[in-house]
Image (cartoon, rainbow, N blue to C red; front, top):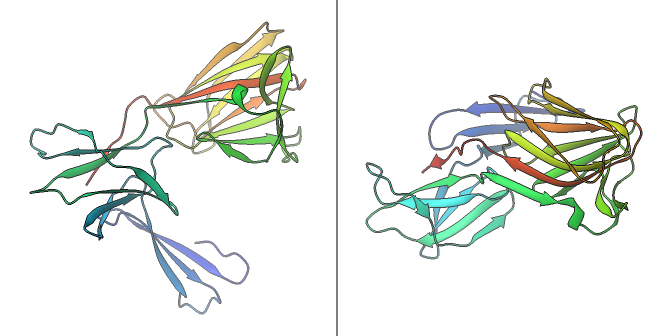
Length: 254
């Protein structure tokens, strides 16, 4: 339960049935009667409806690169990608397919990996936070306060995201392994993978003055990486490339 100001927001979990997710109730004046009640579906759970003679399949995304797969038989399934365009409607991904005859089963499979090149981005200031390519980037000062902006800069012929002191990188996909290509001349850069409960799952250090790009790999043993923290006390570090990997896909069937 959350009480912002004079209102109350209650989230009720629905863990079974086709409508798995949360029910969000908003009581705007705290009189005990919610003015709005909204179903918030779980990620990857398919919902189906008819749309102009087609079957519209909707789901909240599991990753930045979901695939919709289908099979005619669940006893000996042969899953294959569905030939349909995936569009975005609000918070949902949507695919419209011909009504299956006599029947067909569908599932959503998240992307196994997502790589993004910061080195390919235009130079200059970026928002803070900055969401792009399946990642969210936050720039913080030594006290942990948000800086006015992120920035793509060029140093010694390398282009990347400038780590002024601390950068927080949130993968928007489920991510068990994160690879970073960095260029650092700070002499000390610390990389930490943080889990959903706030505990540090993995840590690496780069010491000495690097020459060229260096690869850092952080693994979340048995769990999802919530975000990665990059600390460059001397503020001479660039992040050029990122790759997020899942160790196993987690398909959701319908």
